[in-house]
Amino acid sequence: MNTMIKRPAPTRRSVPELAARLVSLPLVVISLLCVPHALAADEPVPLEIERMVAHDYATNNGVRIHYARLGQGPLVVMIHGFPDCWLTWRAQMKALAKDHEVVAIDQRGYNLSDRPKGVENYDLNFLVADVAAVIRARGRERATIVGHDWGGAVAWTFAMTRSEMTEKLVVLNLPHPRGFRRELANNPEQRKNSAYARQFQQAGAHTNLTAEGLTFWIKDPAVRARYVEAFRRSDFEAMLHYYKRNYPREPFTEDTSPVVKVQCPVLLIHGLKDKALLSAGLNETWNWIEKDLTLVTVADADHWVQQDAADFVTRTMVGWLNR
Image (cartoon, rainbow, N blue to C red):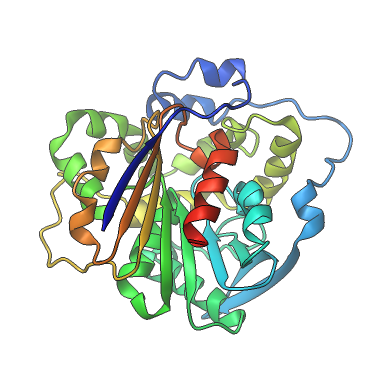
């Protein structure tokens, strides 16, 4: 059964003046990444979620993947995107941990995970294998996979290539790869708004990034301070290897390979103000899923929907997973 739900705009905190001026994220992100942000002189105070979680590592072919875990029950693995870290799931982790063991990873190249050199080490197949290693490290055979942005790309690919390990799939603001490829090939607005990704694919693009500038999207100063620490531990070149290795290149074409359908139930949540990943890419997703699809759009949320509409996204995920 395909269920399509459009929710009213959630109430959210005020947007900082800088973010309020963002007319098109992809067209301004390059210039914003180098803008420093003032930090308090004192040592940043750990967030509530940091005092609650335990930390562990899984190893995939010599690469250590850090993860934070909370709760007990069926396993949920959460995968962040760019630029981000495990903290992006702080609101959802606390709620989901009432009935699940929730594991939020740092993808390779980020924060406390290893940062192998070489673009070839950031192929989607390795990123998928990292998630599988985390599931095995928790002594499980299957898990619900949750991903946002690049984490969404990993989640989609995991569900298609490791169906035996995928209980359910939740993807936030990342259309199915076929839908996104279709929009790049045929939608001029999507091509224009993907200019930032083509810049990220250029040699030396990582030299324009700073830990402070990468936090441009974070509203809460206390959270921003923790992210600056995480990004200072990260490898900027590795972050952009995700784009160099896996993002489509011109000339853009549709994927005409045989369809490998996702075999589990899917929850898609999409903030409609996202300019980097247009909602048109969601069309026809139901053709690539064997089981039921629940599509939830959030009118007033941008790319980081799990932050812009944290309470609503959390309630939606809890309700869907526990149904």
